[in-house]
Image 1 (cartoon, rainbow, N blue to C red):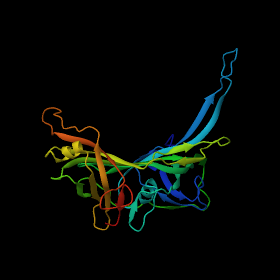
Image 2: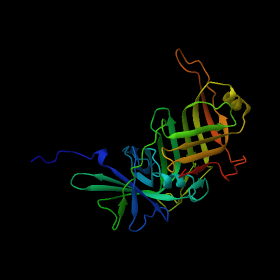
Image 3: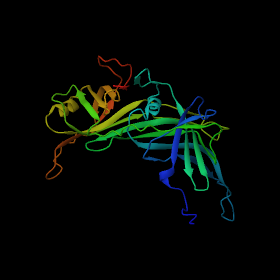
Image 4: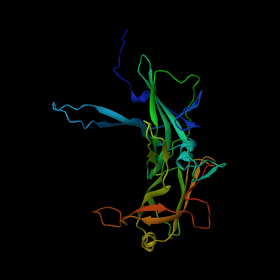
Length: 317
């Protein structure tokens, strides 16, 4: 009989599960974790050290001292319906009101638990007090719709067993979305004729900062900055309308749906958008399309929609 066929852990067997915290940095008792769908993760502890400046005649360093610890990391994923709704709400500093959500000011933190099977047992890493700093989506023609969420946290703990009473809800098996079949009614309002889009990115950034204090090895808090909704788009140059909107610095809007089936789609509306960055529109070489490569920044809604924020997302569409 063959034994000891491996010398270490395999990424294929790693499980990441998350749960919202009531108090930042405190995992709920008997937690009901949600197992996550992801393509990669890179949660890590952050350890800060300083070296003593003591002068020594023997030229040795007196001591390397730990002065801080934290946790941070991100998950990368392929988008599927309802899978990341809780993280999306936290990235918007808001909560779902029925089937809609607008960016707000209320933070939510998470505990993430990474289980790594070792053959003879399991290793558990828990990252506490995680608040989403960014949430992004990338939509490119003929590709899977992908995304990423990055977090800033408080600390990391290790264990060799689950938390007493912990349960784990398996991830759903909803279909993975693609740019070919899952994107509908993509429109840039205020631009006519409608541009034809080859790729689009969307990012929500909270500009988080850690707050440190004397007598605390960990950050005392994590404070948000502005909610910045931005992105980029690559459009075929088929008319001068989009370029003119860029030059005139006009308000435009961005609206699109994501999903394959009625009732299982998201509608994303960014009502007030400014086109920024470089215009593109260059002859880049032989046998190529002339493309407009634009960035955009969203502002507080000043359109007739009056959503009371910068971005509105609806589900069950």
